[in-house]
Each structure stands twice: as C-alpha cells, then as structure tokens.
Image 1 (cartoon, rainbow, N blue to C red):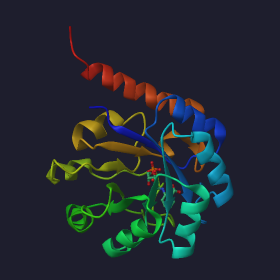
Image 2 (spheres, helix red, strand yellow; image 1 turned 120 degrees about the horizontal axis):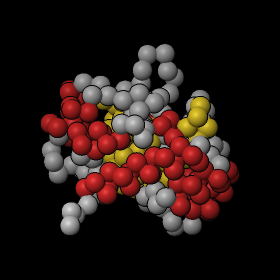
Image 3 (cartoon, rainbow, N blue to C red; image 1 turned 45 degrees about the vertical axis):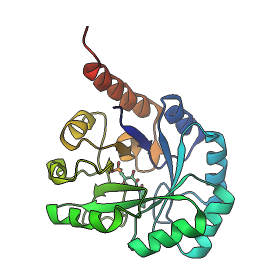
Image 4 (cartoon, rainbow, N blue to C red; image 1 turned 180 degrees about the vertical axis):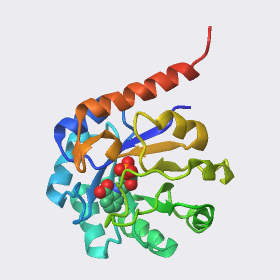
Length: 221
Ligand SMILES: O=C(O)c1ccccc1NCC(=O)[C@H](O)[C@H](O)COP(=O)(O)O
C-alpha cells in the first residue's frame, strides 16, 4: 500500500500547490516562534483555505496552551494538531476533547528504549509520529534534518500505523520505507534549499522518487 506523505513546514502558496499537485496526503504548517518555518495564525489560515480539502491539514506546535488551541480550532480549522512538546497522554486527550481535532503525537527516538513511550500514547493519539531526537546544539524539537537508526523500528508492533520522520529525503526514502515500513512519512528539510525555504524542484524530485519506488513494487506482467 502507498504510504501517506506529509510535507511539513510549508509557508508559501507555490510550494503548497507543488505538494498538493503531487498528491501529498497531509500538509503541515509550523507554529513555533523559534522555527525558521514559523507561521502566525492568519497566514496559516490563508494557506489552509488554499488547500480546500485536497489534503489533510496539520498544525505543528509545541506545548500549546488552551488559548492557543482555541485559536487554532476556530481561526485556522485544520484537520490535525501535531504536538512536539511534553504533552502527556492526559493533555492530548484534553486537547482533542476541547478542539474536536485529531492529534498526532511526536515521540523523539534515538535508541530502542525511546520506543517504550509508544504504549502510553497509542490509544489516545490518532497517529504517532516517530521523529529523531533533537540533536545537540539545536533549539528545535523537529525539523532538524537528521535521521535515526530505522532498524530500531523492526521491534514495533506491526499493527501500529505510525508516521516516520527525521532526515528523510529523495536519496534515502526507499531505504526508510524498506527498513521501517511506516504507514506514512513526514518530510521537511529534505525538500528545502535552506532551513525554512521549501523548493518546488525538490518537492517534485521527492515525489518522483516515491513514484519510482511504487512502480518497482507494482504488479509484474
Ligand atoms: O519543522 C520545524 O521547524 C519544527 C519546529 C518545532 C516543532 C516541530 C517542527 N517540525 C516537525 C515536523 O513535522 C518535521 O517534518 C519533522 O520533524 C521532520 O523534519 P526533517 O528532519 O527536517 O525532515
């Protein structure tokens, strides 16, 4: 089955259209002041309006308070909130109840024991996103363009439909899909020319590679 593909950290109509025209399943917009991909509520709402149901829309944020989640739900109206902070399973349930939105919980991974956290979240999160742990020197909990050891994921329950992210690009996505078998992949830096600068050419190259992988897997005559 084709994996979901989320292009994250979009911030311009041109790059958003590129992702949509190649059938991204999810498009992500970051609201986190320190991020080079940060968007305020209004420009984010403008981009979500452009999507107009062609993909699922995701606001990526970190430990949002109640006032902020209310603004997301009322002014942006995305399909998902993706949470990259220290949100507990209880807080995740509360955010879902208050907004009516689906929640994707990002869990940072660098070693096998990091996967223990999955058990606490899998029943409350609508999707788990397994992302690389923040590298030393970075002040961002995501979007760092570094990958982790995907062979760790072979220990996961095969029924867990998770998203994989962290340093995925056109050069390594085939290996990511082969080793980790995720239900979806999430890409940000891998389709940028510099942090926060998405590139239409790189988005197309990434989807070309996914098409090539799908054609290799297709039925042989
Ligand atoms: O992308 C950001 O700047 C960001 C900031 C704060 C929290 C999360 C953030 N990104 C989360 C994502 O969903 C990224 O797509 C994911 O971490 C993978 O990023 P990359 O390794 O750059 O592909």
